[in-house]
Each structure stands twice: as C-alpha cells, then as structure tokens.
Length: 147
Image 1: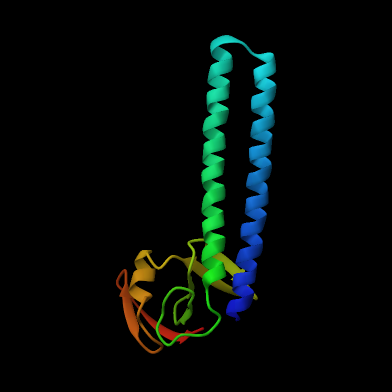
Image 2: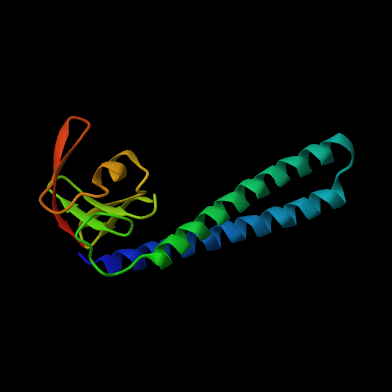
C-alpha cells in the first residue's frame, strides 16, 4: 500500500464531493429565485428561509472539504519514525491514515481508516513508533509499520 495513492484517492473523493456540493448550492440558488417570482406572503418567507438555511449548511460543508484539501496538500511523503499528521500507520488490527477524518477507504483490497489526530485512537497513536503497542477500548494494538 502506498501513501501517495491513498492521498490521491482522498483528493479525488474530496473534489467529487465539492463538485456535488457546488451543484446543490446552484440548485438552491435557482430554487430561491424561482420561489421569489411565484410566491407571496408568509409562505414565501418560510420557503426562502428554509432554502437560505440549506444554503448555509451546504456552504459549511464546502468550507470543510476545502480545509480537508488544504490538510492533504501540507502532508509530506517522507516517512516518519514517529506517528504524526500525515502518517499511514499499519497495525496488527487495522490500518490508519492520520490526517483528515474521512472514514474507511478500501484501496487495493486493503481497508484504511482515515482519522484525525484529535480522534480517540489518533491521540493514542500520535507519538508512537513501529513496534510499540497501545491499548484502545481494552484491545492491544501493535504498530507494525509507519509509512
């Protein structure tokens, strides 16, 4: 498994998600404008307010995706001896990418959990090195390799 391939897959997925969110926002703008032309009174105000709230939620999601892309752009491809931001961590239980909280990704038949260093297991892993064991939820996890 390669860290570069994982980061590229994450970038692709984030770009796809951003494009979907931009389409959603464009649809909401169009909907708001068409509501404004055909409605009147309280119904109009309620409809516009609901659309405005959805636009704000969508914008917040877009901002979050942009921040995740920035984090990925700062990650070094140089392997570290200690686990930190940008480490691809192979353990005897699971594989973790410490960087952005994205969830599970299957890459070349291998599952990788993309987590933040602020997540519970991310905090435990940060600062450890290959060969060390941590305990997470009464389960011992041994770090086998850091990429």
